Picture: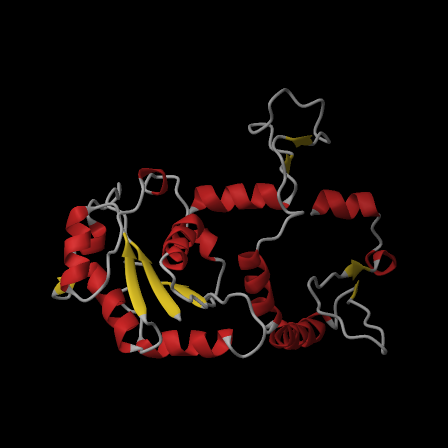
Length: 262
């Protein structure tokens, strides 16, 4: 037996009542309910909520609300995983032979029946414990939030910084580094692993484009007193950097003089 669980608590802070606000002529949650029922994959479509109004709307649109979610799973810090586990355990306690649980968010009005069927096929394509959806972006999505991007950049470097404004005490000199927080880049979540795998698929394309750019640089710099990057015949570089070396003998300058000119 497969069960769809739609978490929909009533205490939304940023958009009060968002789960049942009108969206294109229907309460928001109904789009998720209708997709779950129309796909034909689930014997039960359960809405997990602590709110009587949400429960009433959910029932009106064909979902089951067999219990009210407990208070400890309805606060601002409650995660999706324990909410799903609570619903699954409720079903097991009632004798349901649950083999799969699908979580569909109440605020997913663009979900399609085809999406759910593809996820179901992916789950059953091998001995997987779970699947979840991801999307590719042309650039890191964190760039949309400067504060979050800065935080992630700090964690990426084990929270080590040279910015004196971020240090907890005065720097001993311009060379000084300080670790101002615990670093988390030695851990990897399933989500990060999935995103990493999706980016791996782009490596060949990225490397090909970099080699095209490198050939252009080679052509532009051919008559200048510089040595372009050397590539070994038996290797294929990703050309993360295109480093050139100045031929000091041809410009009659020392390293110090070149540095001053720069």
